[in-house]
Length: 341
Image (cartoon, rainbow, N blue to C red):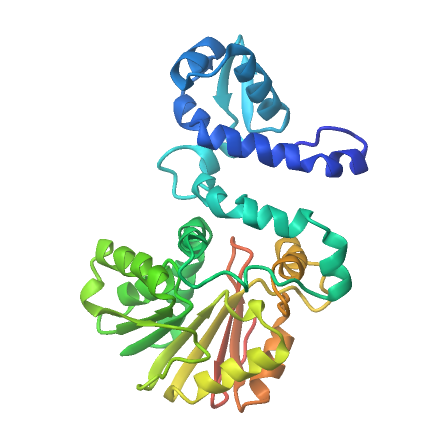
C-alpha cells in the first residue's frame, strides 16, 4: 500500500484515516460495485446512493493508497489489490473488517496505548462474555487467513501420518483446520472445542463441506473441558499466543495427556525467527498480543519447544507455511526425525 506522505511520522499518525476509508468503501459496497469493470464516479454515486463529492473524496483517496486506479474519469480496482477485494476471490479480506476494524478492537489500540505498553499487556477482550457476538465475528473474520494455512497443515500431516482416526481441534473458531483434516483423512472423526455460539459457526462450515457427519462439538474452555478420548492429532491453531508461559505449558500438558501413543500436537501460529525481526507479520503480532491480551505474545519455535519440553513433549518437525506467515510446529511424546524447511 502506498503512503500518503514522505514524512513517515505524519503518515503513521493518520493511518486511522486509511482504515476509515477502507471500512467505508467495504460497507458501501464500492469494491463490489466496481468489480472487474471500470466505473464512473456518477455511476458509483447513483448505485451507492451517496453524494458525488463523497465518491470523488473516497475513491481518489483509495487511488493514492493503491487500492483503486483512475483512468479517463473511471475507477477500477488496482491489479495488486484485486485478489483481496474482488467478490468471489478466495483471498478476499473485506469480510474480515467486521472484526479487525470493529470499534471494540480499534479502541484497544488507540485508547491510551502507553498503558498496555507499561503494563505488559491489556485486559483486551478477556472481559467479553463467551456468548458475545464478537466471538462469532472473530470466527468469520479469520476465514481468509485460515483457508490457505489449514490446507497446508493437513497436507503436511498427511505426508507424515498415513492413518489418523481421531482429531481434536482446540479453539476451533471457523472450523477450517478440522474440516481440512476431515478431507485429508476420510476415516477421521473430528471433535471441535470452543464457545457454544462459535461452534455453531464451525459446525455450519463442516456441514457445508460435507463432513458434518464426522464433526462433533465440545463446548467450553480448553482449560475446563473434559477430554474423554485419546487423539491421533491435536490441533492448536492460533490459540497459545493468547496466553503467558505458565498457561501455554498447562495447555500442552493437558494435551499430552490426551494424545494416543504416537499422536501429534500441531501448533499453528505466527512464530518470529529467533532474532525476532522476521517475518514482519509475526514480529508485528507480538505488539498485537500486547494490546489485546493480558499475557499473550508471539512465541518462537524455540519458545514452544521449551514449553513442550517442560511437560515431556519433543519437536519432531517445523515448517513455515509459505506463502502464509504462519508456522507449523509438531510435538510428540517421542522423538522423530527433526527437520525445518
